[in-house]
Image (cartoon, rainbow, N blue to C red; front, side, top):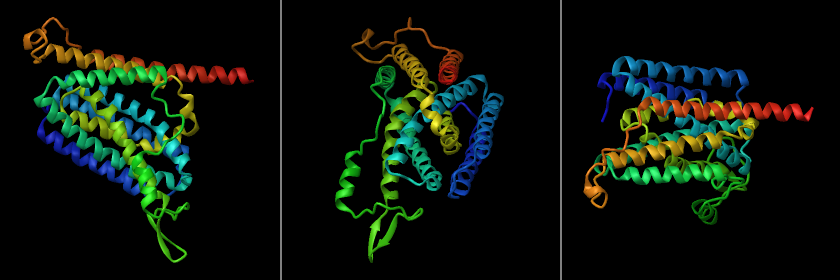
Length: 327
């Protein structure tokens, strides 16, 4: 159920469409390696826009939707940063030239947005009809949080999935790139370039990202508008963040721990909400369990800020300590 005025939503979609087209299809279409200054400017712009958007939502719809947006945006942004680890592995595995990586990221982010939009629509429809699905979402997030802590979800190296392996057997693919082209001519015969495999790899990987992302955001808000805008603002500027972080990604050693706290908290929150609105006949006779407390929105935001902020600060301090010990 939407909590924001329709006019505000329409205006938001129009502005976000412009942001998205400019960021990915005008700036992102230019094959180059962005400078540090360019990356910082882009990231700062979209972060400020997200903060302003939350303030406008507070003004037009109230504090609750605004806090839900900030909570969702921070969670999705943190998950997106964690997913950059996988993008680095994919780019390295397929030896994507640095000047083409920005273009590849643009396509990958576009695929991610489309897939997340589909998952959001499906998720909203399921939640509206079957509130017990929160039990499944909550359990999934708790398991994911445990994997992050134990290292069971780490990707030390990339392994091609079945779709990519099958594709390699049935079509001709060269080992060399031809700019941004998907098709090229070699010795008079037409071949697919590795760019096709890269796009499919990123697309299928984004599907797995959505399984983490969408349950997490629905644990913070049930408003599809807030869910979608949180995801869009988290994806905007992601390609610049990829280049800015670069080799520093492996220095964010405590980010998985911070994410595990966030996902675990949201997982427990979802299960508590499912119990509070229980309709399963084998639990409490199908009646809501009223003694289960509701987690306030402000507490969700506080936990997310402290967990992610603490993980980032701890990572920076450890990196400085390691540098000092090397001297």
